[in-house]
Image 1 (cartoon, rainbow, N blue to C red):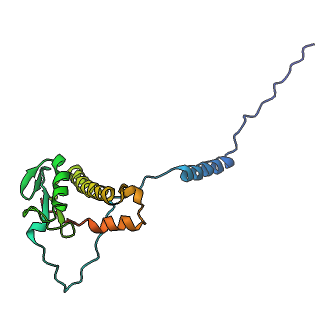
Image 2 (image 1 turned 90 degrees about the horizontal axis):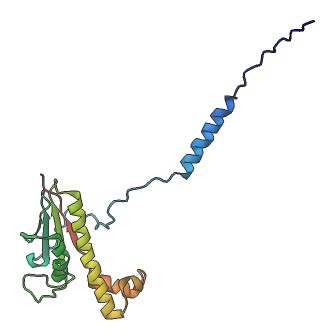
Length: 183
């Protein structure tokens, strides 16, 4: 006698689709929480208060203003003289710390104003390098003054200290950033 065995039809296994949506949602939340997004902070500068409408700006002697122009080609002109980026820091330091000795430079650090002007087509990298050189000049001037007066660098004085404020008052950063010319 032959017995025929019938094969039982097996059902195909299924993956539950309802939990897939939950898993995808949980993964989405996880990645949103652990992902960091870079935030461009821009150039950190404290701007002066907006001038009142009917008040005339104070007169500035020509000798107290160091004019720096960066043209569309990235050429740097300091008082209409072509200057290499590597020379800018020293020229700014000489200008600010002159104390009236050279009649072509500022009368005092308090009166010295560095004016930066660009063209609309000025390469951004050149502008940033120029601004770094000017800021670096002021940092070096202030550090030297802190070393001479207090025997410590400006960073060691601490921003909240009275000595730090004295150095800032002695060499205030007076930087004027003029509107760019149309290119």
